Figure 1 (cartoon, rainbow, N blue to C red):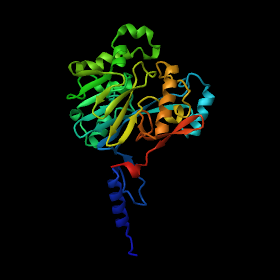
Figure 2: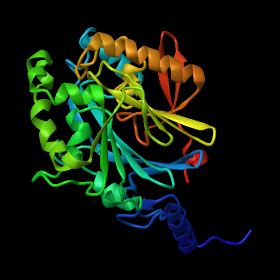
Figure 3: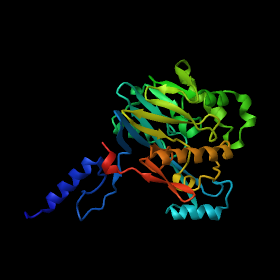
Figure 4: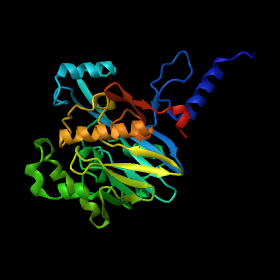
Length: 326
């Protein structure tokens, strides 16, 4: 066996890192003398039939775990988090935007935070660039619902369109609720500021807005699934091509380690917690039964995998990076 020099180790390590899209901020990868911080480029690419799907990380935001679940004591919620090896004093919610290249259209599912909600979020633009994707190439943006972490990225802080050439599609039920300020007093206190954010984000697209039926076709290969409860018109998206399929669950469950494991929990983020829990159980049962590939907006990155039954609840099974990435 030929002797391996330190130079060969370093070069081979660097080549391997480059092959999987890892950057090298300091030191030498493969060197026994350096311990660099390894950072991924923040995107993950795979196929659904002939469609190329890229999940793109937008960062995360944190809050206290206390008050996150409305119908269970904090000690119980902390135990579920501890069982998943997650913090028991803090709740961190990741943000992941899914982008689909059908070969004819480039479609974004939601838009992230636009760097305007939390210092730990707003990475979408940089990670899209790293993935070779540009906002001005996006033909269609599908809005699942109008919570700020999903629509604030539509517009810059000074009101310019982030996706200048895109049509915006949203379900009729979701549009009808948030576009009518008369509904503000009929909404939970914590969600009323969405009525202020709503016109700011959609304003730049006034001539390029389309509303789709709650269970209708959005675009070739994409169909809406009405999953109301999280918001009045929350929509999941079924993606299919060439006999393959995936469902973007969006916010059916926030972090699956908590809300898939205990789908009966009522989230502080839900507009109608009772309806949301019922919808969550129905959809998780569906994708577990059908073994359907899923993405989730708040799933741990790269936010793609499967849902499996686990006792009285469910668990998220991440996709095999080595077996599915392009």
